[in-house]
Amino acid sequence: MYVHEDYPYSLNPLTKSYGCYPQGQMNPGCRSSCSEAELMSLPVHAALQGRELWEKFNSVGTEMLITKTGRRMFPSCRVTVMGLNPKVKYVLMMDMVQFDNNKYKWNRDHWEMSGKSEPHLQNRLFIHPDSPALGERWMQYPISFHKLKLTNNTFNSKGLVVLHSMHKYHPRLHIVQAPDVCGGHSGGYLRFTFPEAAFIAVTSYQNHEITKLKIDNNPFAKGFRDNGLSRKRFRDKDMSQRSVSGQQQNKTQNQQESHLDTTDDDEQVSSSVESTGAVSPPDIKATSMPVSIPFLSAFMKRGCAGLPCGQEGWSQSTILHQSQHIINQNRDSRRPDDNLQYMCGSLTEALSNRMLTLQQQQQQCHSLDIQPPGVHQIYSNQAKLQQPLRLPPKLSRMQLPESVFRSLDSNPKPLSDIFNTIRERMIAKDLQINPQHEQTASGASREEKAPIFPAVQDCGVAFCAEQYTGLTTEWPAFNGNTEQSNESKSVAFSQLWE
DNA sequence: TCGACTGCCACCTTTGAATAGA
DNA sequence: ATCTATTCAAAGGTGGCAGTCG
Image: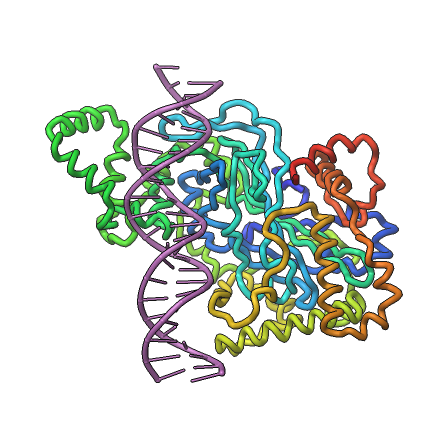
């Protein structure tokens, strides 16, 4: 689902996250048989972290570099999720959605529209490397998608998110309930978009203000700060500049007279946040920009820009989190604890317990005595979403086997493959832990050996249909009941997944 | 001619293995 | 023998920039 102006449901202006509860598109018959699709009945919330930084970038017009080999986003997407069932496993994914149907170009000091956008590429989903994990884990720490890479290379096979240069996108978070080991059915499917994290994909930075912000805030770009004392490039440049200082002075005067390229000079003077006092606010130029600039006005239209950075009304600590608009009116009134038993059965439960134990060990390793929030706490205190969660301990310092935390390959795969893999591993793991389950659940497990999720093409149909029509998709809809007319779309989509 | 794109560069952070010490 | 802290090198991320391409 795309969140545009015609989005029919009230949005929470404070959290600026958008819940999609695809009840409307659910097959009624399926709903009754899939009441375990609990995800859609939970008040799940997602909020973007580091909003101050995002707003800084937004005030100038965020740009993200895309390269053939893939480039990470900065700022990267970090989200907090609340309201999940702590005992149920979820897969978290992210992709990029076109913000509008325009192509943009940089015109001296602002972005302007430059015709219609190119045909939309079917995005690949970046699967969070920790997926699948218990809701408890997702809610415990902010979820970072810093490893997500953007590219303009449509033929890449490394699971990069493919974008068009000079097009505007915003990130979209997918929360998918992991499949039930026993039942063979899946849970729900939620999506959240973050318009405040919108950006224009570029192959080289256009706006010097953005370059400054990136250099000032990204630790990897420290070498480009002017106080990088050992920076050979700047030294050499400085030397050569001194040698021709006379000529440069004349040129600079001419440039200042024409009010052009002054930012180039500024960039060489200071762009470091560490050098306090001498730095002029980077937003001076931006704030004086006319609102008619499409890129900025688009934000302001949505109420995502236009407020000065640091304004108290937007402070995370002071905002009370409002409830999301829950479309699903058929909420399951059972407590999530009860749902656990109902939904998962013994196999999943055993695995969940094991995961829980491991996570407790993980906490002990780092002397973190804080217990994970209980279900009731989560439901009763949604305001916690706005408080920054503590950072996760570094895995490199843990004594736990990596395999505990590693899940699927980092490369995005067709969702059918993903969930079949998840399911196979869950079964395999559980049989290792509790060999007796092989007998008690033998009847079921034999049947379940075959993949329960449809093949690549079917998933492709589902996602293509979603992209073309805006319909949301529930897993049972993947069962190959799709019309033949969708076949061409599905083939094209499945090819993208390679 | 010009804007978009590419590939390489120097500089930096992060990560994990190796080692030393308690 | 085990655990913890430190060191160090490799891997990988960063924007700049000159050159290429359409």
